[in-house]
Image (tube, rainbow, N blue to C red; front, top):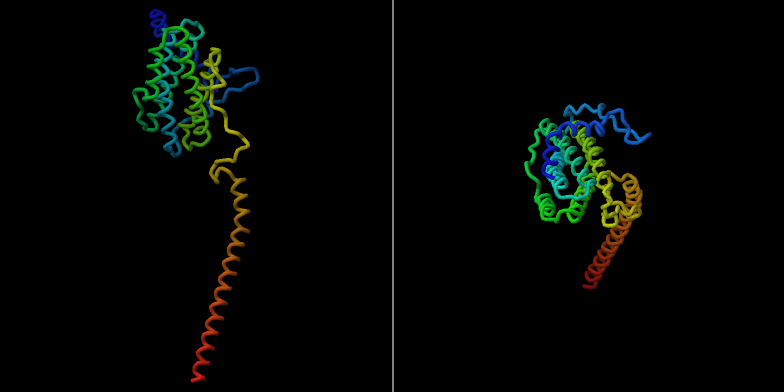
Length: 266
């Protein structure tokens, strides 16, 4: 098994190039008949536009993904007895090596400092895999941890892809999105994904929690309700003020009359 891993490392760069050609944006190939591949050559990635904190965080997260998924893929080739799992691990490792190159290139343009080791959670997942028995126990942990991680990063990438002002970040987000979709498909092809245990999507009938700026319908509704409400409140305040003033004036008149009457009686 270690000999196979050494051989994979030897020919890895060539295989990675082939793998990237299959998924690289802008290639003429189609993922499926009639299903287009985003034309990545239309994005120049020159690093123009403001870079937000969320943009920087995404570049760091892409780097972190490779720091733990590459060694996890190496373990899959060593510890799994299933040829399909070993192939999934090998492919994800090779593709993450390429994605890591893209992330480091983007970070250099953007002057973002990248980590050099996995974070605490990722180190914990790797420890689980190292401690797992070879074969089915390892396979289950490997697929579960990677599928969960890809499920979390997928919407985060989409958010940055649609919101960033910086074209270098936009290009990396689009590339990372294609890698993640590929990895999700590979992991699910193992037949080990427990779909019932995955987080459920939010109920579409539930009230939206989007900010007013992102929810123009709700904003319009609130605006249309606020005008008559404010008018009613203002009318109530004016009415109460009028009654209080009237009562005060009436009281003053009664006091004045009482004083005059007292003066005349004397």
